Image (cartoon, rainbow, N blue to C red; front, side):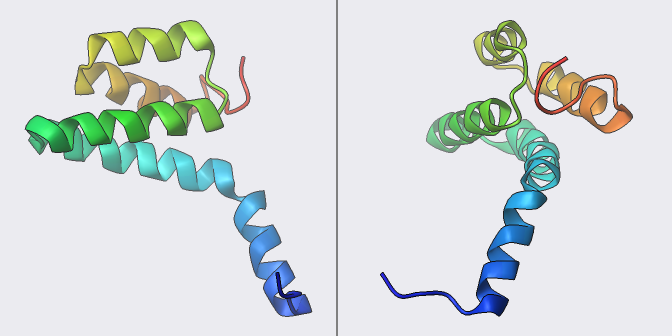
Length: 92
């Protein structure tokens, strides 16, 4: 694997430093998409939601509740809590 330039290293580092913010934004986008999706696309979107929630280190019981309900309104509540600061990435 090739070495990265200093500029590339900084870009990669900034991406990972802001990963939580990217994941929060993606969850909000996925919530909107889930309201409109049907069939296989909906299943793929829910898989993406599960991965994003795990990366954000949302408490496992909350993740399980969201995934079992498969209801975009329940996911919207998690997004609202994340954006208001009531639920912090990394747990709590």
